[in-house]
Amino acid sequence: MAWRPSASFHLWSLFEPAIGQESLHCDMKRGFSKARSQEPAIKALNETNTKQQQIGHLAQKGVYEFHQNNLILDRANSLQQVTEALSLNQEPEEVRQRIISVLKRYQEDPILLGKEIIRLSRGDEGIPKPILIEYSKYQFNLYAATDCIFREPDGTLHILDFKTGKSEFDLRQGYVYLLAASYLYPNQPAIASFYNLENGKRSAEIAATPIQLKAIQIEFSKIAQKHQKNLASYRKNPDLFDQIFPANPGSACRSCSFNSICNYSVIEVSI
Ligand code: SF4
Image 1: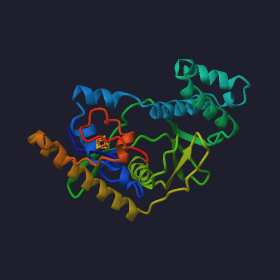
Image 2 (image 1 turned 90 degrees about the vertical axis):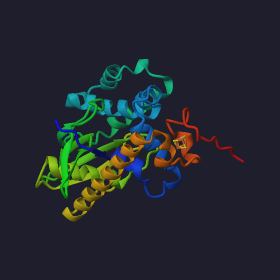
Image 3 (image 1 turned 30 degrees about the vertical axis):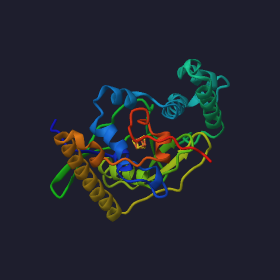
């Protein structure tokens, strides 16, 4: 298969902060995770599931297990069965408690019950199949892993993204799903939304006109090209890493996965 530049919501979020999250943005994170990802120490950090990511995967898998057999939602011991399927007894106490609370909440409000589910991910499938996108003779692969797609009664495809923790819903991610759906399910109306499995918070439904999708496609094409330029510059001049991917030390460092190896990392002292 021919090599092509790639783009994803993750790359977009590393490139540009979400509105209101500007102070948490740091270009150097993109440098570590994309340009230096093969260095052993960085590879290890990239591969280490953080606690929050682990909770996200287990929560998604819990929903998947509940729906493996619809009857499981009605059975008194279904919670026990899902808990065992997830091997929760091998998880740290905090992770176990948070996932049990997710499972109980989902049993009380099984939002996918009765839906015409087209696809429900287990959460551990790995990198999705790329979608080839071409804009103005520039080709790139779009990667968009969807948690769940179901069909609304009027035939509209609904792409549902599960969240956990305190993460904010980022509208851009919804648009990325809709762009992917326009290629995977052409000519089918689609909407996207987010649902937090821990607190039950739902986003509004997100829809996009063909013009909006075109604009997202153009934005992605620009991001993929700029990113490739940055990678090429780094390969040519590795010593210029911190100029190509400038650091933004500050509050971003607290939750940064690279703070243990970054020369610019700061520890904030609260007054
Ligand atoms: S530790 Fe701070 S400065 Fe370094 S990459 Fe992370 S956010 Fe940027």
